[in-house]
Length: 163
Image (cartoon, rainbow, N blue to C red; front, top):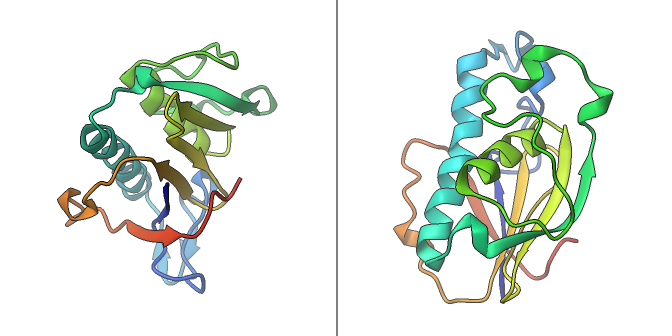
């Protein structure tokens, strides 16, 4: 199995923003706008979509292996902006549609949820802190086929599953 970490950070010393709550704050001499945040978040959705295509899989090929739902701790409506299914009801073992997967990715990146998705073959998608997405794939895939010319995401091979 091949393991990868996907991040908006080129290196660990990057002094960039790390949270939805940073919108409006000045970080590294630049104010984070909603549009800039949303574009970065959308890059992760684009990555997930391209990854599923490379694996010749759909979101429905993945089920929820582990789940931590923090949505009840936050009531600020802006946290849910741009999320198609912000109140999606989930249980371990559930399979997902593509739209549900994209909503869950946004929820995870906003620290409203943590989850681990797995396929019956052992492929996985999970999330770490500070805009890190981790994937494991059982198939040989050519990551050069992924189009990241505008996304500024970095893919780093890892030795093992971080969770």
